[in-house]
Length: 200
Image (cartoon, rainbow, N blue to C red):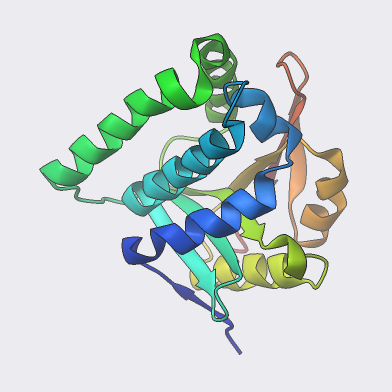
């Protein structure tokens, strides 16, 4: 029985709430946001950008109780964006580089994105971007169940990629059928690239 649904941009505030609570103490997220006063506000804005980017370039899922979410980028899928959406995303990208990340972190973020993209093939694939659960609900298997149900949502001919900077996450992903295919230790934070092959 499904306990999640695909959602729309009308839920972006709730999605941002979940991701902010789940990742506000994440070392990788803290590392790339500009240091100083109101860093917590910048982390929230970063999570909002991730959410907006996914609504424009993929699918966003939320649990029925709205306490967990998953962001999936869908490369190779044709998605028409109107002028307003394109402009909104552009404005957020500019804000991201100058106000949220800070100039000193832009180079690290671009290197990280370049390393990730090197592992992705041309054509159709899925990129499991973020999965988050409110801290009070973590440890109950919600994230695992959400990943499983979302993977079943797509056609079996998709290959799914994800990355993590936390080595402790790898055993969980391996139980879900992912395998480590690359390790980028040349970056500021070691990045593990995982892939789940299509069943077909």
